[in-house]
Length: 546
Image (cartoon, rainbow, N blue to C red):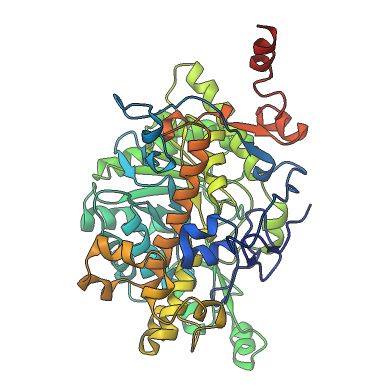
């Protein structure tokens, strides 16, 4: 069943067709509103509740339990008990409000990371949109205290980067991205820099180790992503830039070095070029080859002083999933991110997003199953992050509970980019002199925003929370996109706390798969999560027989 485009209870509406996440299938940086994530970037936790209090009553629209998806999982609630409280804490009701729920998470084998919330960004790499809005994303993540991922190819596509003897020796864009996050880093969260085939050839890991030291920045080995089963793409509209990328060793389509292509570009029949990355492991045909290569790669990274090493895999299938979990465990990988089909933050081929790969809930259910097999054998199981279509607090809860106790974070792609877009647009509308630099798309505030006020102090519910953290004088340096990020994630935090309080779980390690129920029999079969009226039915019957 297709999701509705509007939610009268929250006063939200999708501009385009909603995806499983509730976001529009095509999310625009210049959007004037107002989906739930867009509105939450301004109003924060207020969006948790029905609008127009005092004038309305509201009821649920339970139309999501068709087919197999995260939306067909239900969150359990319990009427007694309290679990996961700090040691020695009283379980008095005064200590068991939803604000008492601790949503901090930790992950890592060789290098431990503490994050204030169990979320992280997807890979924000060489796409123009990641470059343009980076300050909003990075400052927002740093202030909130959650990990951010610098995606593949950032170094290779940077025209200002310099190569010497076949390796990168200077990358202003990568420096900017890391330094922006570190400006407000307080020990919570982390920076992960992805490494694909071209990044490996350009010796990006060596550059990171030498410039930042092995303890400050993680390296994430890239095996793929949920959007596609080929390497990343970007689009370039300049012939000189296309030629530059071809000389850097990238696959550029059509080939900008061909005379007929240059003539077509000159005449206007070709207006853009697509830059592609290469597939990994094409020269291996056996599992043992991949296993040995992976170990040597991890050993090499750690040998140069990189203390934090993670792995990102996509929606390839069961064999690749098992390989990722087993090899990550064998090599003490700090985090394995498993991305289900099929979103994309750049220019993933549309029909590939539609038709390729394993949907998130199926992939993640198998990940839990395979992790359990390894644990039963006494083998190491890596900490997991689940990705693929998450946008709201219930998605975070379900991802963590479905994979418990192995899942530590929900990796969120497009949802965490929306506040960056919106905040930048608002800042550009209020401060026209900054509009071009920050990627603002509005000349003035649209009514959807102007109704909330005409200054950032009036517009953003989280403005003074950010000011309290950084100080009044520093607020002039905080991008509005970062304020919007703080505001939206505060809504996610409060919503997650409320769900957890309802399940009587007051810290993330206390979450379990029993905190979920399946809304239909198909979902029960594929996930192993009991159908909703079967869950706790034995306990119910035991009570009745007393």
